[in-house]
Length: 392
Image (cartoon, rainbow, N blue to C red; front, side, top):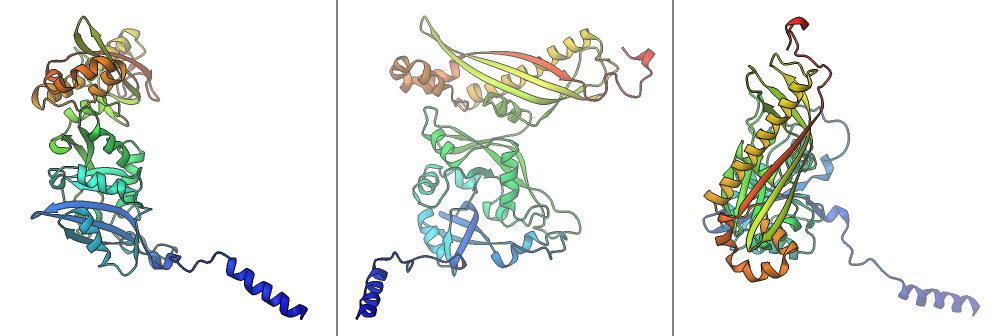
């Protein structure tokens, strides 16, 4: 009788235990590493780069061109009237439950960007699995072709793009930041632009890497313009994202030039409204190190260092000026989010003028000031290959 009671209590208690009957095993998941959005013939195209678990581990891969990386991922694409319909059809092409929680990269082609970013951003932020902090890129080529690349160096093209973003090469924009940009007062956005680097002669057509070149600018949430160097450098400078760059700077009266590697460049915006006049002050502070000297000038001479600092200041001010002319005079679009600065510092005045901002921005007075410092001359001071007595 006592044993019967014990067994009965055990059976009853087992009914109260939480079960895992509705769980999804990892072997039943298709883990998405990157997503691409294209637009063709009136249809939205959604591409998923999916991890292949059976080839993801182990050390038996030989590491040839495209080998290793080529066996780690696959891509699948579906189209629909909108991106939600495309995702629904995409799931029907994959035999496992698609899991988007590991998607760290989203590539949107410029052609898709012309249709407007709001639909894509709205969907990615509403769909439960997508990461708010996934990095967003724009592409000249189709996003599908970018994700199909078999990067010989990394395990996948998505990993290459993630590493490039973490190195601050170009802009580093997350899904959440993109949403805030296009919903902000200026309604503009700036994304790093991707190209497909040509493969080496003996490699396959896809055994290559994505390459960052230029910026894609979005006006009112739609793709508007591509800018390349030198204008793109000025744009990055204005949005405080000019990093990991080596700049050629020439001295007046000297043949050749100096190459300065930036160590820290900071751009600060200070809006002001005085007697009804709206003005923006742009202050740029830069620190750098000389990594190449093809002139006869010797940087042990303080006057040469001072002249180099002034020349670098002129270079940076010119880059900012080019970016401002493009923004104010050519595109008449506030790509640098000046509006957000005025809204933050002068909320009442902004509320009264916000509907007129698009007309006010091209005429806005902008003052740019630059201060530089040379923190080092590399591992040598004088120009190389020149006898000391002839170095100036």
